[in-house]
Amino acid sequence: MGANEERPQTFVERVLALFEERFPWLGSGQDEPVGGADTVDELADLHKSLIEQREKARRENGEPRA
Image 1 (cartoon, rainbow, N blue to C red):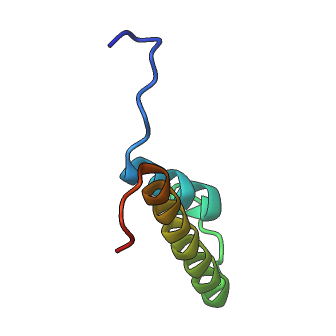
Image 2: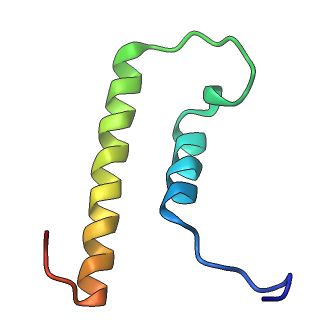
C-alpha cells in the first residue's frame, strides 16, 4: 500500500477520534474543570452514535441484526 492510499479507520481509531472531538480536555494537558453531568451526557450521546454507526454498517453489509 502506497503512502498516498488511505486505509479505512478501525473501530478504535473512530472511538479515539470521537473522544478527542467530544472531550478535548482528555489530551490537552490543561487542568480545566469538567462537569460530571456534562461528561455523562456526552458519553451517553457517544454510546448511542456508536451503536447507530454499527447498525448502519451491518445493514449496508447485509448482516443480520444482533
